[in-house]
Image 1 (cartoon, one colour):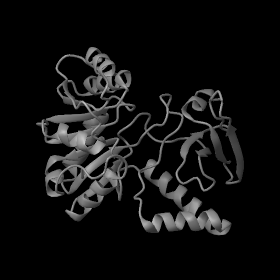
Image 2 (tube, helix red, strand yellow):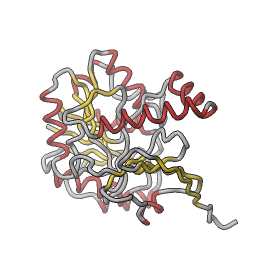
Image 3 (cartoon, rainbow, N blue to C red):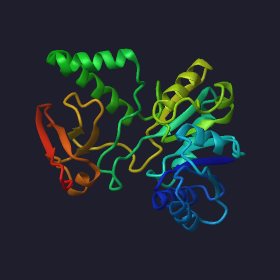
Length: 295
């Protein structure tokens, strides 16, 4: 049995969309929603948007993401536990593929699909990166020493593209808690789902560390998404930092461009764009989105 855990925080319409996508893919799934909003109007809107059979837990205050997921897990009956952010949704066949992957790899504790950034699937997002002092040190060094930064950037891009285009599931050090399927046995062996000491952020980093310590691997399954595979000779990377670590990735058979709808996904600030031509020549651009908030 599959149990799906979703934490709502002032996102009732998105939560309803996420649930619809799960039920379209796995109609028999148990879905548990925890409302962290602490707002009567939001709770009423959420209750009205949920289809029948959904279990709703109202916390009356914001417990934080990790504690809310733990609360939902206490009511979950499934052997497979899927964590899904309310602003995400699954595509047809995704959940079945993830379950099959864990069944084929008994020492894998968790698996994630490749995440698409936009609904049009123009851009794919990279796998999660394990945050550590070494990672932060290398990133800081790369920002200060340009030759080191270029080397790191290209190494990171090569790793990401190898993962996204892999024909089989790829071993990972880190998976995002926003779209992760876990084996219940692995959760129990790791000492539980999330450490309640993490209110928000890094709770999934800690979970992945504990899963590794318990002897379980982590997998990224590039086939658990649509469309399958990246194709095209041109590559466009869009990032909020000049090292493109991380970035969103798009390929095409013609010189790529940034669609207008992508602008709505970005906040004010400076962005970096790197376009790689079929021959390997790179072109760098910056993109500034002004802050249009009224003074």
